[in-house]
Amino acid sequence: MFEKILDEFSTPFYLYHEETIIAKSKLLKNLNLNFSHKFHFAVKANPNLAILNLLHRQDFGAEVVSAGELFKSLKAGIEPSQIIFDGPGKTEFDLKYAITQQIKSINVENLEELNFINEYSLSKGLKTSIGLRLNPNIDADTLEKITTGKSGGKFGISEDQINFDKILEMNGLQLSTLSVHIGSQIVDHQKLIQSYEYLILLADQLNKKNHSIINLDFGGGFGVIDNSDETLDFDQWKKELEKLLKNKKYHIIFEPGRFIVADSGELLTKVLYIKKSGNRTIIITDASFSEYIRPALYDIKPPIQTLNNSNELKSYDVAGGICESTDYLAKNINLPEVKVGDYLKFTNVGAYGSSMSSTYNSRPRPLEVLMGKNEYRVIRSRDTLEDLCKNEIM
Ligand code: LLP
Picture 1 (cartoon, protein in one colour):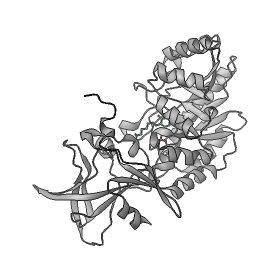
Picture 2 (cartoon, rainbow, N blue to C red):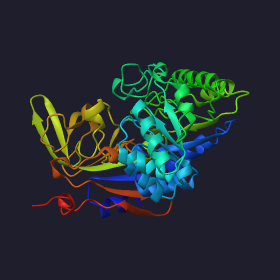
Picture 3 (cartoon, protein in one colour):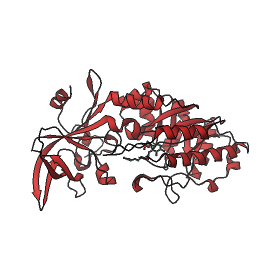
Picture 4 (cartoon, rainbow, N blue to C red):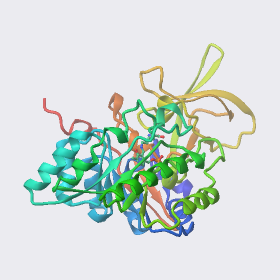
């Protein structure tokens, strides 16, 4: 089937394997955690409607960070009561939409948000369920550019800035959730456990003071590392987490994104040119950082496979066609000898691949294909040239 897909669609395009997504969902489900919990897919990892709908059918809720993600999640069939709204810069438009949809929780991380949610809810005769996203000042021991739990960063709010008594007097809202999310690609389970422990302690203290915290949102961050088998030790993670929650009655929310979809996705691209420059041999592909920006943004090294039969390894840089010197997908990698017209396959790109793509250099955003056991189908068509002009007026 793969050859047929390669024949049928022109590169660059994303290909997702449905079975892998289902297997990853099952892996989490089969942990059989012994406390009340729900997995909410972090939509930003891959907001394609077909993927959201597939995860909805696997019993996932959603974690969203914009009106757009909320709209798409609802469209994919996810109930408002299964949606969490996060984000450090929610607009009034985002908040009004989330409030009127009566979603499970709007996780607040700016003091001004509290007043707005309270007043707008009262004006609509509503009581909005909110959470507070705390900044626990924990270093997740991951890449500096994707760490989010340290003091001094823009995420969350530190406990000492919150007037918890005042929140009790706000009749337009109900504080029912506390949340943390300390970063992405985390493989040290102790870091996650540390952040959970912090949240449980705070919730216990607040509940002794007339608050009714019923949900603890432990965020996402389960690591899938590029070019490495290193993973989170789920056995240890489960053991320590169950110990922390023994005799507690909280409902636990998890928000995994990367873990669910990263290794389900591939980016297929063709070699357009091969050029020598100084002592380097540079492969120029028809994919660029417009289609996959993570290597340029975070310096990660995506796993790359060639689809030819060559055995002779050569050292290459792989670049896209964007007029920017940072437009490299890999540097200094050894690949079986590549010729013009060969295909390259970037793997591990199901998360934050297509979702972070752009139309920079007015390149149409790529096609996306979902492949099942016996069939495949297009789940996003490639932008047309007209699409690139859609909202512009001459
Ligand atoms: N919950 C919250 C509040 C988040 O901010 C995020 C990710 C997640 C859950 C999901 O995290 P995950 O399980 O996917 O690690 N674009 C970067 C990652 C930034 C993610 C931002 N927030 C990347 O390509 O690695």
